[in-house]
Length: 245
Image (cartoon, rainbow, N blue to C red; front, side, top):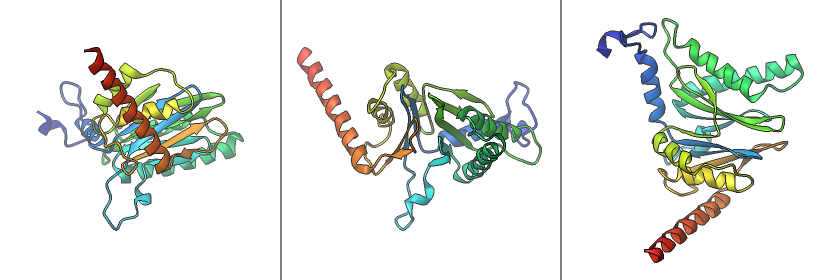
């Protein structure tokens, strides 16, 4: 049935589907995995690094970008589509600051990105953005974590995952999420991500946002130290289970 109704973005199928939007969501599911966790005093994202060619500079394909001093964005899906959204979000953030003499809220930036994505689901001659984003930062004292998707929907989360195997990671977070602070927040994000991603600093990027401080990108040494701590905790748990049985 989809063959009749997936040729134009403006045509609904009889059962209410917009197939081009669903195909865009499939593009997101094939993207590299990203995990966002909101703690009491920080917001953390852990991202699977995109595989690059041997001679390619990996810094040119980072999935973590800065939108404003207090706002960061991470995405999963098509890199070129994301670049367009990132540029427009940065212009909106600076325009808002110039007009209102105050920084745009994290929710404002998330809504702005979602509005652009939604416009591309109901116009002829265009296609949806094959990108899902996490927009994170601080509004005053409050850490915020928003997700947008190709349909133009945006919502706030305590923790979530997008990209490959996101369903499995989301289930892990639902079972293990708790309000964390300090070092425990990036550790929880890494625990979730390494459920499906190789536990190595060569494969993972981590960014931490805290109130009043610039975005902190964890070094490979810091990530490896946390991954070692996670592995030791798992080994200790398995040892206790073996003794109890």
